[in-house]
Length: 140
Image (cartoon, rainbow, N blue to C red; front, side, top):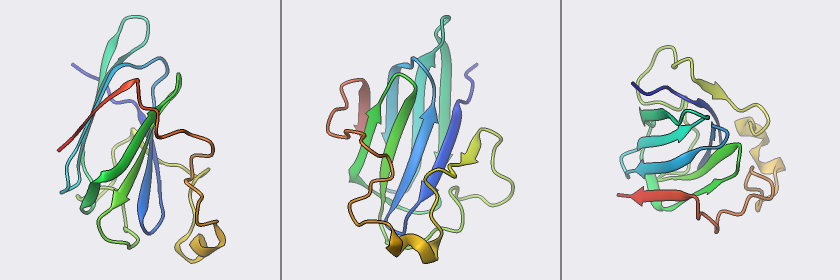
């Protein structure tokens, strides 16, 4: 049986920031499809415990323009939305979100404050999304 890692998220009108907090993750895999199906799996910890996330995002995404990067503490995903608009929530289904899913208040910007952020701001600081050597990323 797999566990759920802590997942933080924030958004802009055109993209999502999804951060999976899983120190020393190994065998990281991501499946992302245009309909918004987001699947993540990895092993972590000394005992290589399996972790998994299988969620349906609120709306469609552009897989080819989405990126991933990995550090020793986080796996960060920059997911491009198919349509540039604010989502009312992260998940397609309504109701209370799962306990492992949290808002990333460090990256959060209100809709009316988005223009105050610089256009080149990725929200992930100096993360290098061109180097993804630790991630097997399957893009459907």
